[in-house]
Amino acid sequence: MSNGYVIHNPLQCVQYIAPHTWVYMSVRRIFVNERTKYQHVLIVELEDFGKALFLDGILQSAQVDEYIYHESLVHPAMVTVGNPERVLILGTGEGAALREVVKYSSVKEVVTVDIDYELINYVKEYLKEFHNDSFKDPRVKEIYQDAVDYVRNTVTTGEKFDVVIMDLTDPYGSEIGAKVYSVDVIRGIYSMLNDNGALIVQAGSSFLFPREYGLVYDTVKLIFPLVTEYQVWVPSFMYSESFILATKGVNPIKLSSDIVDATLRINGVKTRFYNGKVHSALMALGSYNRT
Image (cartoon, rainbow, N blue to C red; front, top):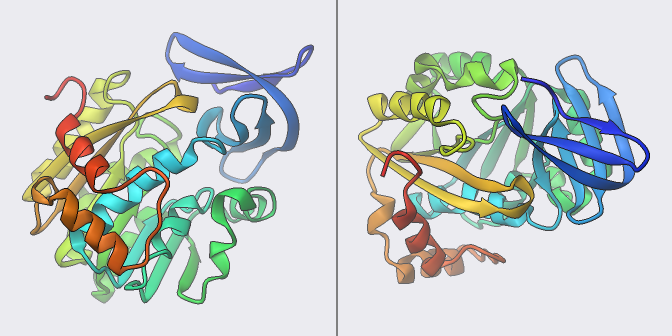
């Protein structure tokens, strides 16, 4: 798979969508175009989508619609647990998932794990519109480590979480993120979760990459008793993003819109996209090729 790149005259970003599909995006300004120890980082301002983060040529999120992605990633799992106190984010990225997690009054600690310290430094400086300085929240503990090693070590210590959010690069993306979708890692996460805990996995596009998505789904299904799929259209991605929500106890499909809205309200959470009705709609959508 080739990476995206920036070309000039006019200044454009070529975004990888699928093996034989690319999208040209006009670029207004380049903030970062550097290679860290682990990956290529591109932070730009797009004409149509505002600031955007690309890792190894793949768009991670864009300013005008990232809330659709991040709210859909975070809140179904958080609401399913109800009042989560300890949350783990594997793949800190833009810090927008962290932004959504710290909205919950019930949260006492959130641990972020990312292998790329240089990336997060760029994010903190150039993508404040995404993270809203959530890194400064006193409940946040930042760890810079390979997610595989972190899970392995945490299983040994017996540390527990209520929600684990896997916001890594796509399973068909970079080698850094791909290895975290293994049976050993998912089994380790299962053991790290409390009895009513939940794991949410962003799993790329089930339509464009059915084989890779299916491997992740089958791995999660092998270990967790309750597994729910859902998807949401993200305009800047040019496709529907697929998610896999795995729980030990509560079935997210059975949560009424009233319960979802009440849980958000009790925790003081305000959203732009996600609410009780959206939750019910997401749970009904399933995923491509598996419904």
